[in-house]
Length: 121
Image 1 (tube, one colour):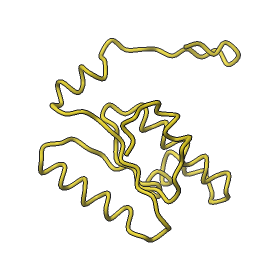
Image 2: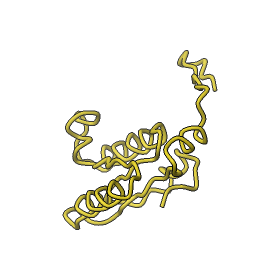
Image 3: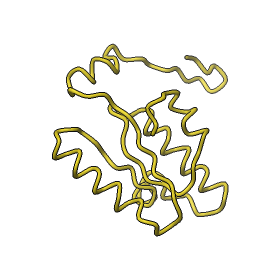
């Protein structure tokens, strides 16, 4: 993939998703939790992460608030900034080796389009 306008090129590695899944011993997916602020999404995500860890399944929680401490620290909470927060986290999920867990408050069909995978639950 080439974006000549911005002079950027997609560098594809030789290790495939299937290679990674074979070594990990399980397939990857993203579990996208939705709900209102304060509804327990992060609590559920971390409990699920603990259980998956106990089962020997590698996982990681990309919590919307935690991401705002670093990667998205310049974003506020306007409608557009919240949308950008989701977009960036969806991109991180796409780039992750084994799709991570991510709690958020709004269902985003376009986030699924970003990943172009049916493994978002």
